[in-house]
Image (cartoon, rainbow, N blue to C red; front, side):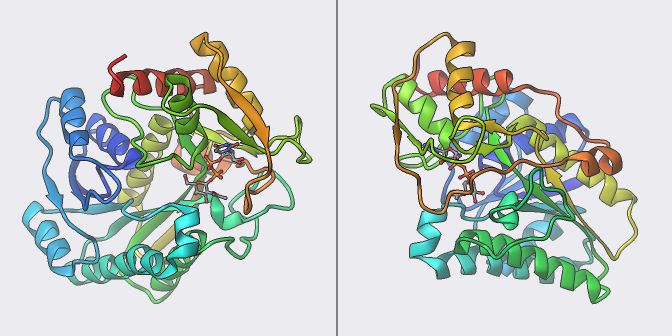
Length: 337
Ligand code: UD1
């Protein structure tokens, strides 16, 4: 089954491409390389031994989508392509709505026109906002988004739900990702942040390698186990495998079909625990200090992931130790160390 992977050169997309191949699917990549590099394709080739079909372009480009889907005989789509920097979305909301929401609408129109049934959408635990109780499950009410970026995920889910309600001949799953970290164990692909990383783990690995002087922990006065924020950190390979499970469920489903799944570990770890575990598994000391809170941060969130286990038959296989070991191996590899 040929699967179009939009944003397939990105962090989660590239790892998903590998797991699709492992599971017998044939991935085809579209990526505009706005937040990824062409070198990812070489990493993918080193892992899989295959030159994957790659199209450089934007998912707002209706003609390109139609051309690729028809020419490649695509039967399903995983739609990763989106911008994801929270702060930037506050400064440039229209850029986010145009790209994240616009491309989803274009894609849905093209899928309906070409009668392609299966779609997996990248959503985020950001749709839960600041939760009242943790862990959050899929039935936990969503909260108004804290940023335009977050709102594009909430709106994206609403667009999909309404499309299915209208009776469209589509089967769609939204996966609500928690915090993906780590890298492929081969160290051939991983996270490639542009500029100063916003996310915790790339900031940690860049500090450990000497690119950044010091990590700042954004607050230790939260009402959590050790005062730092709590998140659900999931190995990117486990997250990638959830897409394979989602496609397998979609294949069996009868359109119109829509469902939503949390994809996390089910466990919350604090920022300080991440630092401590990173130091322990990699046998090093990290230079860090406690700083003020970052505005907009959620105090604590982690997911109940029983639904993904019970309905998709998916569960995590890797540990936090694996994630932080693989993240460090990748950072060393890209710095030739
Ligand atoms: C962030 C976004 C989320 C988005 C995800 C995409 C916010 C509020 N949320 O999640 O919507 O889906 O990125 O990847 O921005 N931390 C530090 N020091 C650092 C960096 C981070 O202490 O230098 C802390 C943060 O305060 C937070 C935790 O590490 O408590 C994780 O941060 P991050 O990796 O940015 O992810 P989220 O904020 O959970």
